[in-house]
Image (cartoon, rainbow, N blue to C red; front, side):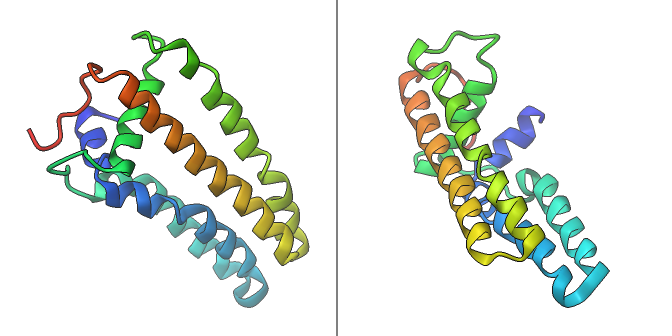
Length: 154
C-alpha cells in the first residue's frame, strides 16, 4: 500500500471494521445453502470490501487509540527487513499468525460440512489470533517510538 493508503488505514474504523471480514466471508460461503450461486456475489463483495477498506476512511487526527497503534505497529513489523526491530518482536508475530491460520482447518471443514460449531471454532481461532497479533503490534509500536509512521493528523 502507498503511504497515503497506510495513513487512511490507521483510522481505527478501518481496523475495527476489518475484524468482521472473516465472519462475513464465512457467512457468504454458508449462504450457498440458502441462496445457491448468489452466495458468490456476496463473497465477491466481501473480497472487494477487504481491498477497499484501507482506502475507505479518512486519515485520523490521532493514532492514540489501540487499533490505530496496532496498525502503525503492523506497518513497522512489515518493514522489519529495512529497519531493525527489537529481537523479541521478530518471530512471535509469525508464530501467532500460524496459530491463527490453523483456524482455517475447522473453518473450511465446517463450511464444507455445514457444521456450525466447527465454523465457530475456526473463526474463534482466526479472530482471536488476529487480536493477539494486533496486541503484539501495539507492543512493537511502543517499543519503537521513532519509527516515523505516525503522520496522520499532522
